[in-house]
Length: 265
Image (cartoon, rainbow, N blue to C red; front, side, top):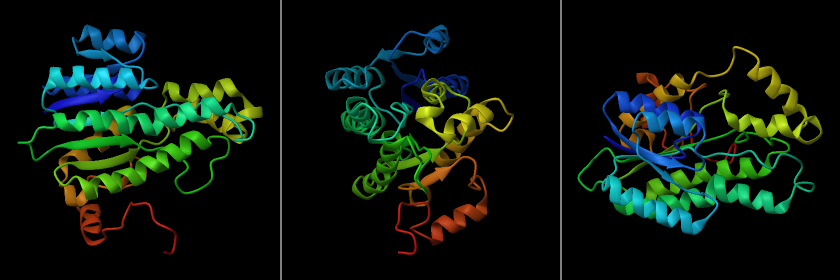
């Protein structure tokens, strides 16, 4: 299996790299800064390519380098994410808001577009996976850029599934995981984050967060399933019965299950 992880040095991305390298998969990815996670992956000799996901030229150059290095990928995972800016839409910096939408959605699509030509034409297991986030089912106050980007990714998976028949496209919500993404909320404080500031503190200081290994297990389940079962759908690591035959039967019987639809139609 040849794997590319965009933002491999994110907390979950790093654990995915290490886990799949141990399984003998050929893993490579991108990084933005040479911080602790970069050093971990570098020690394991995992090929990493510098990429600024807010810069279109950087994305194009990195995609070309990745394509030349790996040549034909089977699995492509997008792991970037930022909750900045935190705050009510009318009060946040609009440039930060726009940058967030680019990082969390638009520029992931640009990278995907650049890497699709490097998919393995002989593989039946080509899979593209994204990370979902909170706010799909309600209005999460003070995180509009992050939330609307995740909803766009959910719908884009369904569109990509319909347009590109030889690739699986799925998106998975990992739930509350102890990662650096929550630093934006902690830094913003209660005045900007609202009730979510206290909720974040409580979650991160509890034993209720989702283990990263469980997130990886849910991704592996999606990877193992045929396109007609998982592609174009939004899964949850926490709430779905992934791994069960019951869920497979439900998905086979209901083409609209776990897709973005108007409630009650």
